[in-house]
Image 1 (cartoon, rainbow, N blue to C red):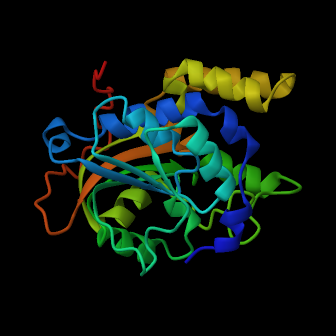
Image 2 (spheres, rainbow, N blue to C red; image 1 turned 180 degrees about the vertical axis):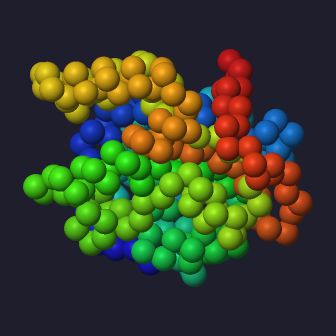
Length: 268
């Protein structure tokens, strides 16, 4: 279902400096969970959580009995043990047959697109948890397709993708995929444009001293201010944050609510 060796040997040095990214992810992964479900969630795990930063910052919002990070990169695990002491770092694949643990909540943050068999992966996840909190990148956008068609060295999906992505999705395709296996309770689309501090941090980190790209990002921000979020994401991409139950539970999803309320819960 995935390239095990790729992830054992793949660890970005940038992850050592990505606390602001983890804080942002945790804020929205936590906020997408309706309050009435939080009382039922005590045992939490993340699959492919790198150093465990998402779990660490989610644990700042509420005390959870268990925070288990399952990660294949030994470098990531070792760094996580130094930085995020409240997270239990596990150098293993939760879905292996030799592991029989089950959780109240499994976090899937930027992970589904890494599996060749995305449906098979979600079907296995369903056997290990009652709920998922998911962040999915929306990469099938107009800008992405234009870059792929006109770039001299386009990034392509599959074996040679630099980040190991086998799939890309629209918002609609994301919801359809998840609904094959779970009942969606809450979701909202998201763009990094909503968080100016994180946006400026990323732009400085990746595009320092590149004037043309800086102008492009200024134009992109102007476009964001002028159009609905759904239109912006269809053009430039973004993310979906989502909370769902296994299908044995009753759904409360309003399937027509694309522009869901995405105000982060005040969890100070």
